[in-house]
Amino acid sequence: MNRRQFIQGAAAAPLFLPSSVLGRAGYTAPSERITVGIIGCGKMANEFHLPTLLNFEDVQILAVCDVDTTRRERAKKRVETQYEGEERATRTCSAYNDFRDVIARKDIDAVVIVTPEHWHAIPIIEACKAGKDVYCEKPLTLTLAESKRCIEAVRKYKRVLQTGSQQRSNVFGRFREGCEFVRSGRLGTIKSVTVGVAAPSIWCDLKEEMPEPGLDWDLWLGPAPLRPYNAALSPRGVHNHFPAWRSYREYSGGGHADMGAHHYDIAQWALGKDGTDPVEIIPPTDPMAMEGAKLIYADGIEVIHGGPSGCFFTGTNGTLHLDRGVLKSDPPELAKTPLGDKETHLFVSPGHHRNWINCIKSREKPLCDVEIGCRSVALVQFANLAYWHRRRLKWDPKKWEFVGDKEANQWLDRERRPQWALPKV
Image (tube, rainbow, N blue to C red; front, side):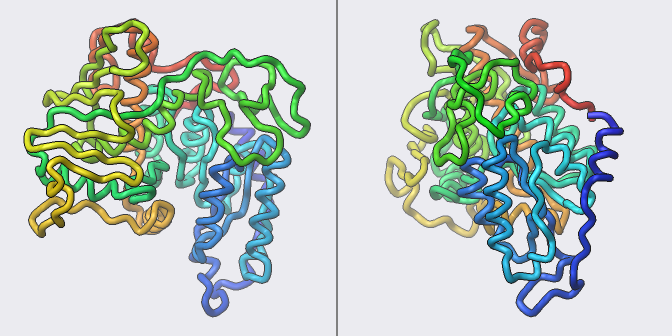
């Protein structure tokens, strides 16, 4: 995206003035509201992001964006219906096809990116460059090079980025408490962690179908290779399921990345590894196996892809199984005895979105800051590379590159269509 395009987009953006700088009783003053644009209006936006943010009095959704006409118009109507009769109704919710039109708006403070994985990094970087704070769904990036660039962008432009790893906010289970037990040393010295999630993605082999009317298919593909439309990738109209783009390498790291971004993140948090990564990656001995990859930290702790669903920690004093709705240990008292005052107590989230909004105001790092999101998804990417190339790899977490391995460093990123190169910071 060049400078002229940004200027043109900003010039075309409508100017809205709040009807009151004070607001009515019971409402947040318009001048104190965080103004938000939603980029991506599929299932996660409809079921999770919109319902939550629409009920925050200190948030105003000013724009929605989706490459599908039906989805974006439905989201626009939902926002305007929610705000009917409120002071916030004095500011129209606009609907856009192109995310760049949202980012160019001077009156938008922050964006929520709810797109497929292959469409995370570019909007993140461009939003940071435009002075916007960001909430982006997990997995935060598709490639290791994207992660490095996103960290650079957030740090350079001093932005607040929250990764959608909601399990750290105890969504779906008692993940914080489980991590506190591990961090407090109840299991003794940790030897290994297994992460039970699905397999990596495969190359897309879907057949051509008739295009969906009102869908900008070329923009949906973006940096991915040009290919014919198939409804499994971008469902027709409004849908209530998770589309199958997650299965294909062009767009995602697979089911491995989908839930792996959650559970590897919890493994990192429990082990206190948020600022680093494993230093060695070992593929399984079976050349056909799609589980069993080992990721080894500098201190010798192994994270292994496979085992029961979620995270299974093995230490010198016992084991702990942590998953959605599961927190149990062997012996049982390791996870049943309440934490003592001198044991490790981690940050208690007020809610994943609320933590993000609070940090936009305070300018503090949120619970799932950009580097946390990038380093957690890196474990997925390491294991995927091990499956795809069947080679041992050594990683330098500080330099963000493979050690002495020219071939492997070519795998840090992917080929992109020229018009969608990874933006410079």
